[in-house]
Image (cartoon, rainbow, N blue to C red; front, side, top):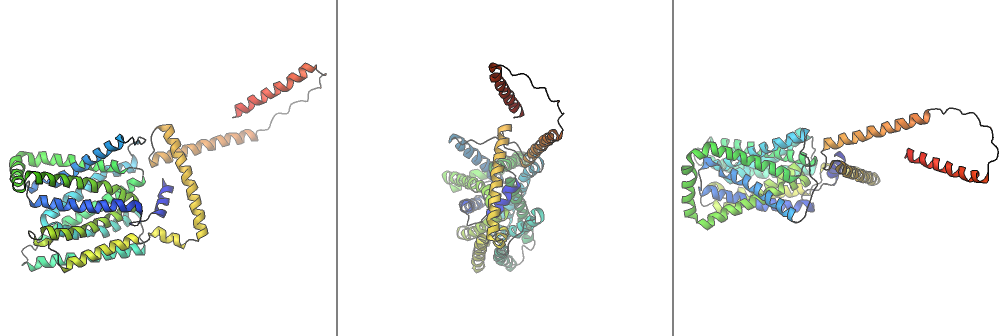
Length: 449
Protein backbone atom coordinates (compact mmCIF):
# COMPACT_ATOMS: atom_id res chain seq x y z
CA UNK A 1 0.00 0.00 0.00
CA UNK A 2 1.13 3.52 -0.79
CA UNK A 3 1.36 4.83 2.76
CA UNK A 4 3.74 2.12 3.92
CA UNK A 5 5.81 2.62 0.78
CA UNK A 6 6.17 6.36 1.53
CA UNK A 7 7.08 5.54 5.10
CA UNK A 8 9.68 3.04 3.91
CA UNK A 9 11.25 5.73 1.70
CA UNK A 10 11.42 8.08 4.67
CA UNK A 11 13.04 5.60 7.04
CA UNK A 12 15.30 3.74 4.62
CA UNK A 13 19.04 3.76 5.34
CA UNK A 14 21.46 2.02 3.00
CA UNK A 15 24.53 0.09 4.09
CA UNK A 16 24.51 1.49 7.62
CA UNK A 17 21.10 -0.06 8.31
CA UNK A 18 21.43 -3.08 10.58
CA UNK A 19 18.82 -4.95 8.53
CA UNK A 20 20.91 -4.41 5.39
CA UNK A 21 24.40 -5.16 6.70
CA UNK A 22 23.90 -8.91 7.27
CA UNK A 23 22.47 -9.77 3.81
CA UNK A 24 25.06 -7.50 2.17
CA UNK A 25 27.93 -9.31 3.90
CA UNK A 26 26.49 -12.73 3.02
CA UNK A 27 25.90 -11.69 -0.58
CA UNK A 28 29.45 -10.41 -1.03
CA UNK A 29 31.27 -13.29 0.72
CA UNK A 30 29.20 -16.19 -0.61
CA UNK A 31 28.89 -14.54 -4.03
CA UNK A 32 32.64 -14.04 -4.34
CA UNK A 33 33.21 -17.72 -3.54
CA UNK A 34 30.65 -19.02 -6.02
CA UNK A 35 32.14 -16.92 -8.85
CA UNK A 36 35.67 -18.08 -8.02
CA UNK A 37 34.55 -21.70 -7.74
CA UNK A 38 32.68 -21.32 -11.03
CA UNK A 39 35.90 -20.09 -12.65
CA UNK A 40 37.69 -23.15 -11.25
CA UNK A 41 35.01 -25.49 -12.63
CA UNK A 42 35.22 -23.82 -16.04
CA UNK A 43 39.04 -23.98 -16.05
CA UNK A 44 39.05 -27.71 -15.23
CA UNK A 45 36.85 -28.50 -18.28
CA UNK A 46 34.56 -30.91 -16.44
CA UNK A 47 32.12 -30.74 -19.38
CA UNK A 48 32.03 -29.14 -22.80
CA UNK A 49 31.43 -25.37 -22.83
CA UNK A 50 28.28 -25.74 -24.96
CA UNK A 51 26.55 -27.59 -22.11
CA UNK A 52 26.33 -24.33 -20.11
CA UNK A 53 26.53 -26.32 -16.91
CA UNK A 54 27.00 -23.25 -14.72
CA UNK A 55 23.56 -21.90 -15.65
CA UNK A 56 21.91 -25.22 -14.77
CA UNK A 57 23.92 -25.60 -11.55
CA UNK A 58 22.92 -22.17 -10.31
CA UNK A 59 19.21 -22.58 -10.98
CA UNK A 60 19.10 -26.07 -9.47
CA UNK A 61 20.94 -24.84 -6.36
CA UNK A 62 18.50 -21.91 -6.03
CA UNK A 63 15.47 -24.20 -6.12
CA UNK A 64 17.05 -26.76 -3.76
CA UNK A 65 18.13 -24.13 -1.25
CA UNK A 66 14.67 -22.55 -1.17
CA UNK A 67 12.97 -25.93 -0.69
CA UNK A 68 15.30 -26.76 2.21
CA UNK A 69 14.84 -23.39 3.95
CA UNK A 70 11.07 -23.64 3.48
CA UNK A 71 11.05 -27.09 5.07
CA UNK A 72 13.17 -25.84 7.99
CA UNK A 73 10.78 -22.93 8.57
CA UNK A 74 7.79 -25.27 8.68
CA UNK A 75 9.55 -27.61 11.09
CA UNK A 76 10.09 -24.67 13.45
CA UNK A 77 6.37 -23.97 13.46
CA UNK A 78 6.50 -20.73 11.49
CA UNK A 79 3.17 -20.29 9.74
CA UNK A 80 2.09 -17.47 7.44
CA UNK A 81 -1.27 -16.66 5.96
CA UNK A 82 -1.63 -18.06 2.43
CA UNK A 83 -1.19 -15.44 -0.28
CA UNK A 84 -2.98 -15.31 -3.58
CA UNK A 85 -0.92 -15.19 -6.74
CA UNK A 86 -0.54 -11.54 -7.80
CA UNK A 87 -2.72 -10.38 -10.66
CA UNK A 88 -2.70 -7.38 -12.96
CA UNK A 89 0.58 -5.51 -13.33
CA UNK A 90 2.33 -7.29 -10.39
CA UNK A 91 1.40 -10.65 -11.93
CA UNK A 92 2.80 -9.60 -15.31
CA UNK A 93 6.04 -8.36 -13.73
CA UNK A 94 6.41 -11.61 -11.77
CA UNK A 95 6.06 -13.62 -14.98
CA UNK A 96 8.67 -11.48 -16.78
CA UNK A 97 11.11 -11.58 -13.85
CA UNK A 98 12.67 -14.97 -14.79
CA UNK A 99 13.39 -13.69 -18.30
CA UNK A 100 15.50 -10.79 -16.98
CA UNK A 101 17.43 -13.14 -14.70
CA UNK A 102 17.99 -15.73 -17.44
CA UNK A 103 19.33 -13.13 -19.89
CA UNK A 104 21.67 -11.73 -17.24
CA UNK A 105 23.01 -15.13 -16.15
CA UNK A 106 23.55 -16.63 -19.63
CA UNK A 107 25.31 -13.52 -20.97
CA UNK A 108 27.43 -13.22 -17.82
CA UNK A 109 28.85 -16.73 -18.13
CA UNK A 110 29.34 -16.35 -21.87
CA UNK A 111 31.41 -13.24 -21.14
CA UNK A 112 33.45 -15.18 -18.56
CA UNK A 113 34.05 -17.91 -21.13
CA UNK A 114 35.18 -15.39 -23.74
CA UNK A 115 37.27 -13.03 -21.62
CA UNK A 116 37.68 -14.42 -18.11
CA UNK A 117 36.13 -13.39 -14.81
CA UNK A 118 38.46 -10.40 -14.34
CA UNK A 119 37.25 -8.69 -17.51
CA UNK A 120 33.62 -9.62 -16.77
CA UNK A 121 33.69 -8.33 -13.21
CA UNK A 122 35.36 -5.07 -14.21
CA UNK A 123 33.21 -4.13 -17.18
CA UNK A 124 30.23 -5.40 -15.19
CA UNK A 125 30.49 -2.23 -13.13
CA UNK A 126 28.40 -0.69 -15.90
CA UNK A 127 25.44 -2.10 -13.97
CA UNK A 128 25.67 0.98 -11.72
CA UNK A 129 24.93 3.69 -14.32
CA UNK A 130 22.59 1.35 -16.18
CA UNK A 131 20.60 0.65 -13.01
CA UNK A 132 20.42 4.35 -12.16
CA UNK A 133 19.32 5.29 -15.68
CA UNK A 134 16.62 2.60 -15.82
CA UNK A 135 15.42 3.55 -12.32
CA UNK A 136 15.00 7.16 -13.42
CA UNK A 137 13.24 6.21 -16.68
CA UNK A 138 10.99 3.47 -15.30
CA UNK A 139 10.28 4.41 -11.68
CA UNK A 140 11.13 8.12 -11.64
CA UNK A 141 13.52 7.61 -8.74
CA UNK A 142 15.64 10.60 -7.71
CA UNK A 143 19.18 10.22 -6.31
CA UNK A 144 20.79 12.57 -3.83
CA UNK A 145 24.00 14.48 -4.48
CA UNK A 146 25.91 12.18 -2.11
CA UNK A 147 24.63 9.06 -3.83
CA UNK A 148 25.55 10.40 -7.27
CA UNK A 149 29.02 11.27 -6.00
CA UNK A 150 29.54 7.72 -4.72
CA UNK A 151 28.33 6.28 -8.02
CA UNK A 152 30.74 8.55 -9.91
CA UNK A 153 33.69 7.32 -7.82
CA UNK A 154 32.67 3.72 -8.51
CA UNK A 155 32.50 4.36 -12.27
CA UNK A 156 35.93 6.05 -12.17
CA UNK A 157 37.46 3.02 -10.43
CA UNK A 158 35.95 0.63 -12.95
CA UNK A 159 37.08 2.78 -15.85
CA UNK A 160 40.68 2.59 -14.60
CA UNK A 161 40.66 -1.22 -14.62
CA UNK A 162 38.77 -1.44 -17.92
CA UNK A 163 41.34 0.80 -19.63
CA UNK A 164 44.15 -1.35 -18.26
CA UNK A 165 42.59 -4.52 -19.68
CA UNK A 166 41.90 -2.96 -23.06
CA UNK A 167 45.43 -1.52 -23.28
CA UNK A 168 46.97 -4.89 -22.41
CA UNK A 169 44.89 -6.50 -25.16
CA UNK A 170 46.29 -3.96 -27.67
CA UNK A 171 49.85 -4.60 -26.44
CA UNK A 172 49.46 -8.29 -27.29
CA UNK A 173 49.72 -7.40 -30.96
CA UNK A 174 46.05 -6.80 -31.74
CA UNK A 175 45.43 -10.46 -32.44
CA UNK A 176 42.08 -10.19 -30.69
CA UNK A 177 40.94 -6.89 -32.20
CA UNK A 178 37.29 -7.98 -32.23
CA UNK A 179 37.51 -9.84 -28.92
CA UNK A 180 36.92 -6.93 -26.49
CA UNK A 181 33.84 -5.73 -28.38
CA UNK A 182 32.17 -9.15 -28.30
CA UNK A 183 32.95 -9.63 -24.62
CA UNK A 184 31.81 -6.10 -23.73
CA UNK A 185 28.54 -6.63 -25.62
CA UNK A 186 27.79 -9.76 -23.56
CA UNK A 187 28.64 -7.98 -20.31
CA UNK A 188 26.46 -4.96 -21.13
CA UNK A 189 23.47 -7.13 -22.04
CA UNK A 190 24.02 -8.98 -18.77
CA UNK A 191 24.04 -5.67 -16.89
CA UNK A 192 20.75 -4.62 -18.49
CA UNK A 193 19.16 -7.94 -17.53
CA UNK A 194 20.32 -7.74 -13.94
CA UNK A 195 19.32 -4.06 -13.62
CA UNK A 196 15.80 -4.85 -14.87
CA UNK A 197 15.68 -7.80 -12.47
CA UNK A 198 16.51 -5.50 -9.55
CA UNK A 199 13.86 -2.95 -10.51
CA UNK A 200 11.25 -5.68 -10.99
CA UNK A 201 12.05 -7.25 -7.61
CA UNK A 202 11.84 -3.87 -5.89
CA UNK A 203 8.43 -3.26 -7.47
CA UNK A 204 7.16 -6.72 -6.50
CA UNK A 205 8.47 -6.28 -2.94
CA UNK A 206 6.53 -3.01 -2.65
CA UNK A 207 3.41 -4.86 -3.83
CA UNK A 208 3.63 -7.57 -1.17
CA UNK A 209 5.31 -10.39 -3.12
CA UNK A 210 7.75 -12.17 -0.79
CA UNK A 211 11.34 -12.94 -1.74
CA UNK A 212 10.93 -16.72 -1.67
CA UNK A 213 8.17 -16.56 -4.28
CA UNK A 214 10.36 -14.48 -6.58
CA UNK A 215 13.42 -16.68 -6.12
CA UNK A 216 11.43 -19.87 -6.72
CA UNK A 217 9.80 -18.43 -9.83
CA UNK A 218 13.22 -17.52 -11.27
CA UNK A 219 14.78 -20.84 -10.23
CA UNK A 220 12.05 -23.14 -11.51
CA UNK A 221 11.67 -21.25 -14.80
CA UNK A 222 15.43 -21.08 -15.36
CA UNK A 223 15.92 -24.76 -14.55
CA UNK A 224 13.11 -25.71 -16.96
CA UNK A 225 14.67 -23.61 -19.74
CA UNK A 226 18.09 -25.15 -19.16
CA UNK A 227 16.58 -28.67 -19.12
CA UNK A 228 14.88 -27.97 -22.46
CA UNK A 229 18.18 -26.69 -23.88
CA UNK A 230 19.96 -29.82 -22.60
CA UNK A 231 17.43 -32.16 -24.23
CA UNK A 232 17.70 -30.32 -27.53
CA UNK A 233 21.45 -29.67 -27.82
CA UNK A 234 23.34 -31.78 -25.26
CA UNK A 235 21.48 -35.11 -25.06
CA UNK A 236 22.19 -36.17 -28.69
CA UNK A 237 25.94 -36.08 -27.99
CA UNK A 238 25.91 -36.69 -24.23
CA UNK A 239 28.95 -38.97 -24.09
CA UNK A 240 31.33 -36.63 -25.89
CA UNK A 241 30.08 -33.47 -24.18
CA UNK A 242 29.47 -34.69 -20.61
CA UNK A 243 30.49 -38.24 -19.67
CA UNK A 244 33.92 -38.32 -21.27
CA UNK A 245 35.20 -34.89 -20.17
CA UNK A 246 33.78 -35.27 -16.65
CA UNK A 247 35.43 -38.66 -16.12
CA UNK A 248 38.80 -37.34 -17.24
CA UNK A 249 38.55 -34.14 -15.15
CA UNK A 250 37.37 -35.89 -11.98
CA UNK A 251 40.27 -38.36 -12.28
CA UNK A 252 42.72 -35.49 -12.67
CA UNK A 253 41.26 -33.37 -9.83
CA UNK A 254 40.18 -36.24 -7.58
CA UNK A 255 36.69 -37.60 -6.92
CA UNK A 256 36.39 -36.16 -3.39
CA UNK A 257 37.80 -32.77 -4.42
CA UNK A 258 35.45 -32.62 -7.41
CA UNK A 259 32.42 -33.40 -5.25
CA UNK A 260 33.48 -30.81 -2.65
CA UNK A 261 33.98 -28.18 -5.36
CA UNK A 262 30.51 -28.71 -6.84
CA UNK A 263 28.80 -28.99 -3.42
CA UNK A 264 30.33 -25.82 -1.95
CA UNK A 265 29.66 -23.98 -5.20
CA UNK A 266 25.96 -24.90 -5.04
CA UNK A 267 25.75 -23.98 -1.34
CA UNK A 268 27.39 -20.60 -1.85
CA UNK A 269 25.05 -19.84 -4.75
CA UNK A 270 22.01 -20.66 -2.62
CA UNK A 271 23.20 -18.47 0.24
CA UNK A 272 24.00 -15.54 -2.07
CA UNK A 273 20.76 -15.68 -4.06
CA UNK A 274 18.71 -15.95 -0.86
CA UNK A 275 19.96 -12.55 0.27
CA UNK A 276 19.00 -10.71 -2.94
CA UNK A 277 15.30 -10.14 -2.00
CA UNK A 278 16.37 -8.77 1.40
CA UNK A 279 18.84 -6.34 -0.15
CA UNK A 280 16.15 -5.21 -2.61
CA UNK A 281 13.61 -4.76 0.20
CA UNK A 282 15.89 -2.72 2.48
CA UNK A 283 18.19 -0.96 0.01
CA UNK A 284 16.61 -1.00 -3.44
CA UNK A 285 17.89 -2.02 -6.86
CA UNK A 286 20.85 0.37 -6.84
CA UNK A 287 22.09 -0.98 -3.50
CA UNK A 288 22.12 -4.44 -5.07
CA UNK A 289 24.13 -3.15 -8.04
CA UNK A 290 26.63 -1.50 -5.68
CA UNK A 291 26.96 -4.74 -3.72
CA UNK A 292 27.69 -6.53 -6.98
CA UNK A 293 30.39 -3.99 -7.83
CA UNK A 294 32.01 -4.35 -4.39
CA UNK A 295 31.94 -8.11 -4.81
CA UNK A 296 33.50 -7.68 -8.25
CA UNK A 297 36.47 -5.82 -6.75
CA UNK A 298 37.02 -8.62 -4.22
CA UNK A 299 36.80 -11.21 -7.00
CA UNK A 300 39.38 -9.30 -9.06
CA UNK A 301 41.78 -9.32 -6.11
CA UNK A 302 41.25 -13.00 -5.27
CA UNK A 303 41.22 -14.21 -8.88
CA UNK A 304 44.62 -12.59 -9.34
CA UNK A 305 45.97 -14.72 -6.52
CA UNK A 306 44.23 -17.94 -7.62
CA UNK A 307 44.40 -17.83 -11.42
CA UNK A 308 47.13 -15.39 -12.46
CA UNK A 309 49.55 -18.25 -13.14
CA UNK A 310 47.29 -19.79 -15.79
CA UNK A 311 45.57 -16.66 -17.16
CA UNK A 312 47.47 -13.37 -17.55
CA UNK A 313 44.22 -11.43 -17.92
CA UNK A 314 43.50 -12.07 -14.25
CA UNK A 315 46.85 -10.80 -12.96
CA UNK A 316 46.62 -7.75 -10.71
CA UNK A 317 48.74 -4.70 -11.45
CA UNK A 318 48.86 -1.12 -10.19
CA UNK A 319 45.75 -0.31 -12.21
CA UNK A 320 43.89 -3.16 -10.53
CA UNK A 321 44.85 -1.98 -7.05
CA UNK A 322 43.74 1.59 -7.84
CA UNK A 323 40.49 0.31 -9.36
CA UNK A 324 39.62 -1.84 -6.34
CA UNK A 325 40.39 1.04 -3.94
CA UNK A 326 38.20 3.50 -5.87
CA UNK A 327 35.30 1.06 -6.17
CA UNK A 328 35.28 0.20 -2.47
CA UNK A 329 35.64 3.88 -1.50
CA UNK A 330 32.77 4.88 -3.81
CA UNK A 331 30.54 2.11 -2.48
CA UNK A 332 31.24 3.14 1.11
CA UNK A 333 30.53 6.78 0.28
CA UNK A 334 27.25 5.86 -1.36
CA UNK A 335 26.28 3.61 1.54
CA UNK A 336 26.78 6.34 4.13
CA UNK A 337 25.12 9.09 2.05
CA UNK A 338 21.61 10.23 2.80
CA UNK A 339 18.92 9.36 0.31
CA UNK A 340 17.05 12.07 -1.57
CA UNK A 341 14.03 11.61 0.70
CA UNK A 342 16.19 11.99 3.82
CA UNK A 343 17.70 15.20 2.45
CA UNK A 344 14.17 16.55 1.99
CA UNK A 345 13.33 15.58 5.58
CA UNK A 346 16.26 17.69 6.80
CA UNK A 347 14.76 20.74 5.08
CA UNK A 348 11.42 20.35 6.89
CA UNK A 349 10.79 22.15 10.18
CA UNK A 350 11.27 19.66 13.08
CA UNK A 351 7.81 20.38 14.53
CA UNK A 352 6.19 19.80 11.16
CA UNK A 353 8.23 16.63 10.68
CA UNK A 354 7.11 15.30 14.08
CA UNK A 355 3.49 16.02 13.21
CA UNK A 356 3.91 14.25 9.87
CA UNK A 357 5.46 11.24 11.63
CA UNK A 358 2.50 11.13 14.02
CA UNK A 359 -0.04 11.26 11.21
CA UNK A 360 1.80 8.60 9.19
CA UNK A 361 2.05 6.38 12.27
CA UNK A 362 -1.69 6.61 12.96
CA UNK A 363 -2.48 5.98 9.30
CA UNK A 364 -0.30 2.87 9.26
CA UNK A 365 -2.03 1.52 12.38
CA UNK A 366 -5.41 1.98 10.67
CA UNK A 367 -3.99 0.34 7.55
CA UNK A 368 -2.78 -2.69 9.51
CA UNK A 369 -6.22 -3.06 11.15
CA UNK A 370 -7.90 -2.94 7.74
CA UNK A 371 -5.54 -5.58 6.36
CA UNK A 372 -6.24 -7.81 9.37
CA UNK A 373 -9.96 -7.36 8.77
CA UNK A 374 -9.56 -8.30 5.12
CA UNK A 375 -7.65 -11.46 6.09
CA UNK A 376 -10.42 -12.42 8.54
CA UNK A 377 -13.07 -12.02 5.85
CA UNK A 378 -11.23 -13.58 2.89
CA UNK A 379 -8.72 -15.95 4.54
CA UNK A 380 -5.68 -14.58 2.69
CA UNK A 381 -3.66 -11.38 2.42
CA UNK A 382 -4.73 -9.02 -0.38
CA UNK A 383 -2.77 -7.70 -3.30
CA UNK A 384 -2.65 -3.92 -3.63
CA UNK A 385 -5.39 -3.89 -6.29
CA UNK A 386 -7.65 -6.17 -4.23
CA UNK A 387 -7.11 -4.07 -1.10
CA UNK A 388 -7.89 -0.79 -2.85
CA UNK A 389 -11.04 -2.25 -4.45
CA UNK A 390 -12.19 -3.60 -1.09
CA UNK A 391 -11.67 -0.27 0.72
CA UNK A 392 -13.56 1.52 -2.07
CA UNK A 393 -16.50 -0.85 -1.54
CA UNK A 394 -16.40 -0.07 2.20
CA UNK A 395 -16.50 3.65 1.50
CA UNK A 396 -19.43 3.25 -0.89
CA UNK A 397 -21.34 1.17 1.64
CA UNK A 398 -20.68 3.75 4.36
CA UNK A 399 -21.78 6.63 2.14
CA UNK A 400 -24.99 4.76 1.22
CA UNK A 401 -25.81 4.09 4.87
CA UNK A 402 -25.18 7.74 5.77
CA UNK A 403 -27.44 8.87 2.91
CA UNK A 404 -30.28 6.68 4.12
CA UNK A 405 -29.96 8.00 7.68
CA UNK A 406 -29.95 11.62 6.47
CA UNK A 407 -32.98 11.00 4.27
CA UNK A 408 -34.87 9.45 7.14
CA UNK A 409 -33.99 12.32 9.48
CA UNK A 410 -35.15 14.91 6.91
CA UNK A 411 -38.59 13.27 6.41
CA UNK A 412 -41.24 15.27 8.45
CA UNK A 413 -43.31 13.26 10.91
CA UNK A 414 -47.11 13.22 10.54
CA UNK A 415 -48.96 15.26 13.16
CA UNK A 416 -51.17 13.14 15.43
CA UNK A 417 -54.36 14.58 16.99
CA UNK A 418 -54.29 15.14 20.72
CA UNK A 419 -56.05 12.45 22.66
CA UNK A 420 -58.63 13.21 25.27
CA UNK A 421 -57.46 12.62 28.83
CA UNK A 422 -58.65 9.36 30.18
CA UNK A 423 -59.96 8.74 33.56
CA UNK A 424 -57.57 7.79 36.26
CA UNK A 425 -56.66 4.18 36.06
CA UNK A 426 -56.20 1.81 38.87
CA UNK A 427 -52.93 1.60 40.75
CA UNK A 428 -52.12 -1.69 39.04
CA UNK A 429 -52.53 -0.20 35.53
CA UNK A 430 -50.27 2.75 36.47
CA UNK A 431 -47.50 0.33 37.40
CA UNK A 432 -47.87 -1.70 34.19
CA UNK A 433 -47.78 1.20 31.64
CA UNK A 434 -44.24 2.43 32.43
CA UNK A 435 -42.96 -1.13 32.09
CA UNK A 436 -44.67 -1.52 28.72
CA UNK A 437 -43.25 1.81 27.57
CA UNK A 438 -39.78 0.78 28.69
CA UNK A 439 -40.03 -2.54 26.81
CA UNK A 440 -41.14 -0.77 23.62
CA UNK A 441 -38.28 1.73 23.86
CA UNK A 442 -35.74 -1.07 24.33
CA UNK A 443 -37.07 -2.89 21.27
CA UNK A 444 -36.82 0.26 19.16
CA UNK A 445 -33.22 0.85 20.28
CA UNK A 446 -32.35 -2.77 19.45
CA UNK A 447 -33.89 -2.41 16.01
CA UNK A 448 -31.93 0.79 15.32
CA UNK A 449 -28.69 -0.92 16.45
